[in-house]
Image 1 (cartoon, rainbow, N blue to C red):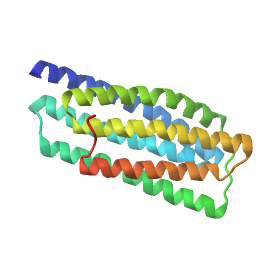
Image 2 (cartoon, helix red, strand yellow):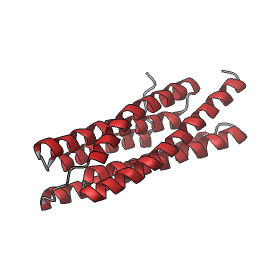
Image 3 (tube, rainbow, N blue to C red):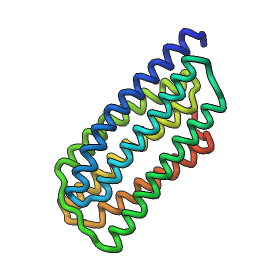
Image 4 (cartoon, rainbow, N blue to C red):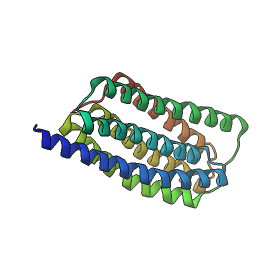
Length: 204
């Protein structure tokens, strides 16, 4: 791979991360506001995940901008991967604690039409964005971007879990579907965080 191609791919990766940051800022604001209004821990957790995604994307931007200025730094990439892993663990801890509290207190959440629409839109946007990130990461051999693509794929899974929980609560009155969905979010976050910490993201 020549230098020009590496530079082009890195700039494409930066563009994808800027897009990620912009989308997730909007998503976080809507999800947290709707979640607080409906007392939905899964929806608030989803909004918190969006803020984590902003942090993770910012880590990749930090990494790539440094590489554009002075070349690849393996130690810097390892630090970036560890920072991304920490964001996963923070998300998992927060969601697990709040979901457990909700199950114990039986704090029933209200129907959130805004949350359902947001989850459905995110379910369309996130897999597409994650796919482009992954393809770019594989072409340039970037573990940092690959780890972040996994976080974006996680966001897509979270959207599906969130949508299922909100719809079940809305249509069938299954109040426990919301915190159970949140625990599913936490499980996926821990798994991806551990892989990012170890730098173990597959290239197949």
